[in-house]
Length: 521
Image 1: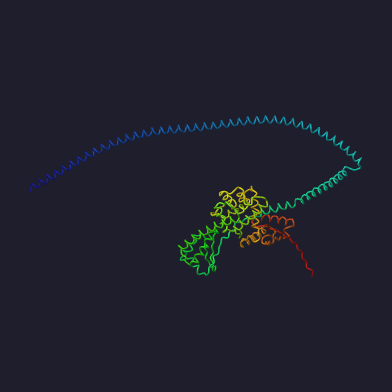
Image 2: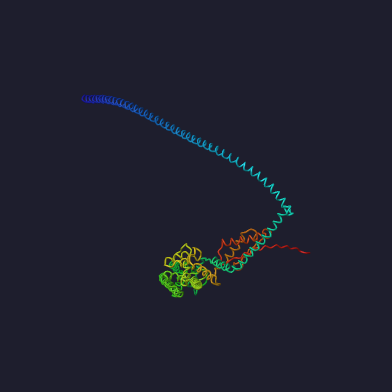
């Protein structure tokens, strides 16, 4: 057992020795750490002290810089204020000197004016004294004359006035009689001038196109074939021709709507060929439309050539010949444009021959005067100016170009052919039955005439009669006098002239009636 005890004791001793060694080592480490911590604390304190001193120096420097900056700004502001004050003082001194100069000059002027006033006052005194002397002499002369004529001054004045009145009446009558005789001699000539001016003024033109064509069918069964499956045929036809095709409840008819008459004609002929053939499908539609378009183009050229040959107008540019052919498919006021141009050309030729002018040149101008109405592309210019530009472009002479551009007074007339074409254009349009208006526009014009009369106070009723050539206005006699009725008629005529466009002239008749009715019982 003893060896065990020895071993146990040895182990306990070893443990105690290890514990003691560990404790001593831990104390030494703690001491070293404490010394290191103290050393670090001293260094931190030293660094902090140094940094605080640096910060303190920096703040002092910043404070000094800020103070210097504020001082300089303050000094700058003070200098600016002093400068402004000095400027104001200088301006005040200048104004004071200027005012002083003006005062001095005003003083001099006042002195001069006073001298002139004194001088004028002396003259007025002299004039008054002379006037008194003359009045006294005049009274003496009047007394002498009254004694000689045995008439007072008032009676002599009346006698003189009567004599002057009779003489003035005689002079006036002779003056009026002389002008009447002169008017009788020149009445016919003046009347012709007035008629010509009136024709030129009323020769107005409105762009009213027939934009609808009717395609008649044998039966309504064809409408379905034209429309096609899901509307394919009609869509292709509209796309190829550029025409709106209206298929509605109208029996045995299809409406073709387009502003371009050439396109409408192409669509109409194409529909005719398709319905006659019976084969209506997209490919066939494209083929027929292309053939019809070429046919119409060739026909336009042929019509232009025949028209030029018939009128004897030679040397025309091919494009102008084509434009003349396009007139066949254009109308204005229901009047075919080609027929109208042929009429104007013939009239111009006859009138030019009577006046001793170049008849061929006049025919040329008359034929081409409305070419601006058939543009292939839309233009905002008036047709007269557009036609003049085309004529200049294709080598027409200046007289012809001026006649085209001036036939609606768009430009100044510089050629003798210009008024000739203007008058012949009006004559062709004024021929009875040459032009016809659309019913709706005609009715609307009559309504507009009546509405213009109703816009004035005192108007009871208004009637447009004689196809819009006369307007009869009934007014209330309590509100409108005879003089006001005349003024009302004039005002209505002026308003119609400024607000409406109409052929010929409109007569305005204002009727004012007063009735008094009594019944005897």
